[in-house]
Image (cartoon, rainbow, N blue to C red):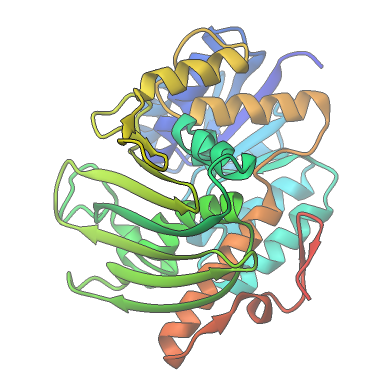
Length: 371
């Protein structure tokens, strides 16, 4: 295959991150080409083109999907628009990079995921935290067994509520339940839900509580007790707050013979990064995050450090498209993460623990039968 022709639908904030990432990997030799981008806003189209000089700019998404030189499409619109655009991209035979959440409601998520998993094109979901060096190292330590079996974890995820009432760089649709579908748990911490299943396996049962303190249309606080099918248990605390300039996540993993503590943010080399490891009878050791990053880049055969983790996710997507192999994370992973979040919301409504398997109704994700 020659250069992969990239199309972009939606030129808002997340599109700026994606195009900055795509421009950087293109400059580094990844064979991609900025063919076409669309957005109803002329100003938004101009901003995106300043990041990466698309050959054609359009007001309508159909112009991108009908462009024969577009091989793969990034959809970067509000969640409520995802369903029609994802299905249209699949129907047009375009490889798809899909932003999360997949849709505002779970039945629509199921519809889209099943369509994507049965399509002949390559699809990848924007769970870019799977490419984070610190999380990869935490997962390696757990799966290797060198710290003994995992027992429990504590996961905390917080950022400023992404609405212009609190953050002028945000957009307001995330505070509207009809457009977003949910608040901090669905819009923000679905990343963490995916990471936890990636490390500890699928979640079996959840019990959750949510709160709406800031007065927007979706929850700004969520606490979830999760029990994985592997037996590992953990707690998740997710918060949309009003602290401008703060965005951080923290994961503490307790294994039989060691404890892992790591903190990270949106940037590859942000100030909040940390990685601590403690083994029996030893003092805790703080491992420089940059050392972990450099090891990962060397293992992947990469030299230059990325700016966003999206750069590594984009590389993986392009490689999957060019080699015609399944991309990861895929829509099966998205279905599992969404089913877990949906189970949490149902637990809030019922006041009882909820089975993820029952929510998923026996469907298959990534080759695993949930019955």
